Image (cartoon, rainbow, N blue to C red; front, side, top):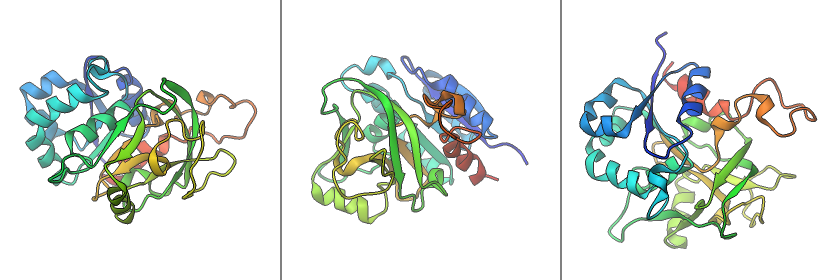
Length: 261
């Protein structure tokens, strides 16, 4: 069958676009890296793709706030194009900085009359965190996490603390099955309502949230980097543990590709 086409949205400061494209290619997709300026000039170019990914990095140097400038570009100039993309049954993935961008566009979690319902802010540690974390999933309808119960992936961010406007919003997202990925204790990789302490929850996200899906399950934003664990040798303990033939992160990309096959 024809490979689903994947567009990796490049921007100044993004530094994970090559690795992300490679992960989609390895999973069976046909990936192409396209600069945001080209999309701003020709929004119709997105119609040729089935999957859109906003990769990790530091778009526009994270000036003002992480993902803010790219998020504003998308929000003010590409909102209608992305609505059409989503309405066509296509997939959108935002990784780390891409998660920050998706939240700031309102594409991942729609705003209400009071404004944004959630955001990503500074880690409680007050510094950049670069470490491996254990994750538990509650996939629900999320396409990217089907058949995945737990993951071990690296994180690398300074503004990754997920917070909601209030507990009512958090409860609403939980009931809707949108809190699909959560930090877990390394020695107990399972969903828990208890507070997972630092460093297992590296940023003190409320309810241990590491990833959020939209109501359709076809848009996912997550702080960990699945593209950085697609081969077993990328794991720091690959010579000491039986990790299987591939890295766990590849499953996120395989699920996306499989959706169109």
